[in-house]
Length: 128
Length: 128
DNA sequence: CAGCATCCATCTAGATACTG
DNA sequence: CAGTATCTAGATGGATGCTG
Image 1: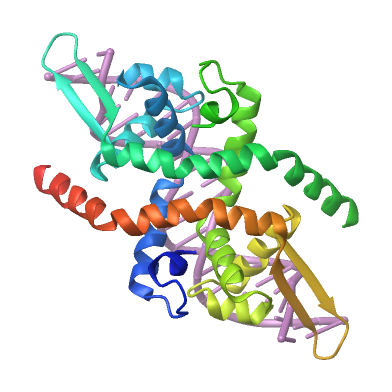
Image 2: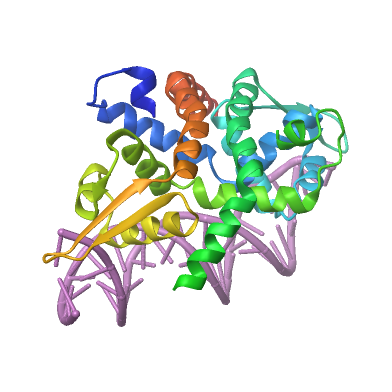
């Protein structure tokens, strides 16, 4: 796929690019990152606890870890308000927003093809 | 994101749909699945060993496992030719092809924003 | 409130050896 | 060639307890 974007007709992919793209995708394409991306896109700016409540089933540990990673990758802006009790807000950066848009196609695809996948799986399991 | 596709302006997401979509994405969005998807899209029909050679760094175990999963999900068509030595060929189904197209946006995004991510990470690491 | 530190069960994936 | 089977180191993630 990437080859078609970078080099429309050539075959050899720059393995360095491929490795980097793979690494980036590996990091962003995990469950929690995608879910957080989604809630922040929908709800704008949220506090730590609010993100946790919005992302059903996430543990505090994974919430912290994932938010920190996303901040490190420049997907999320973290703002600390020096008040008591502490108030920390999270929102998507432009980069994060553009990613969530790019992922939109995959979400759409998944939503559209859910039944076909389930059907394929049932058929496969029946066969074997 | 999915909410925008399913319900353009409403907020409440059907948690059942969300769970299913998340599950589907979790299964398809792993490193090896994406790489295999990519090589099969680019090269068409390949034998087991050829896929293994094309996907750099994959172990035989993960190759078998991932191909089997993709077959089960209806992304890949597996054809066994009853000859000696055995000849088994893999190619994308229509479903697999449509997925690889949906993923194209993410690959493009990753390729386009690699440097920005690296820069963000360097800045973050310097800060802390 | 917004975390960090720690312990622990589980899952993953690589290496290795074997087979129709 | 195209797998299967087994073992294991390491990563993952949940639960719990503590702090500025």
